[in-house]
Image (tube, rainbow, N blue to C red; front, side, top):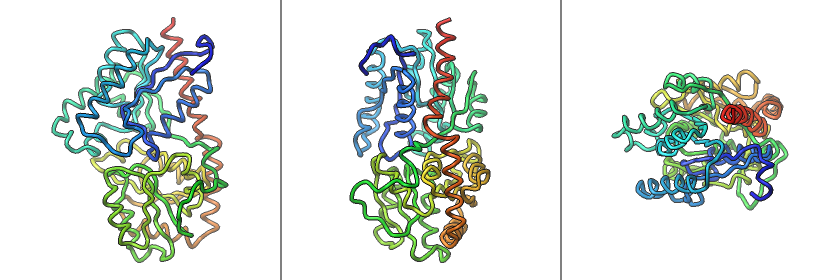
Length: 376
């Protein structure tokens, strides 16, 4: 970090055992919050698996080793003022040690336990063990930060003592309507976009089916950017369809131009295991698209549906309904004045209320409270 450490407000150890890979929401969330805290004179060190820089997901044994190494590095770095953990079953050891040493712990929760079982089905065989490891961390935490009000209620029900809601946001300096393409990227002249993790709950099947629906505009392509378990499915359809183009994962800094050039951004998430209807959704991609002046089409779940309806910056469709999704794309494509008005409203809203700088300010406020309480 450099500089005189006495000028810092506090030393924060940030543990993210979910590797922060560019192109996924976790990367932007973790790094934007850290940048905002450092701007506000916090000394922040990020501890994460080394395979964050790789596109290859290692074996379960290698991941377990990396989880341990990241926590050992944190322990070896000296005693921080606060340990900030992106909620993960394997962070149980560091959460326990911090509790025993009287170090304040913040747990940031981005989804319920079921996210683990949906993303990695083999873990469901030991569901009770994993749930107990995650639940105990919520109960030990001095503060739990959630991204939706519904998740906050869930965390309280799991025994969390103190919970605040700090949703996702967007970098409004990077994601803006004027953003230009960076690099040699071959894009269609007219396209809608989905970007982010290609996870089972993201509605990939719904999007791919919508493209084949007769209501989908014939001269509009679906551009998909990201990586994850559904990658092979997307690649297979893109190889045979003239309406689907897969760009793979792209660096965070190159996404603004891709998003700003789209007609509409999609977030057609499904309700696997009741995840979306119960916990609510404020996907990062929704805020970044709106910051880019691009309207959104979202599934009818708490959070993102309320946002789209409330600001008039997008359309809401039923979950897992390819016809309705195709119809919504068709409507916005054929009504440019409506589309542009929605984009302006979205940009204005996110600039005023949902920038990452605003989120860092909210995060710092609760961290200062924790630090003052600990020092007293």
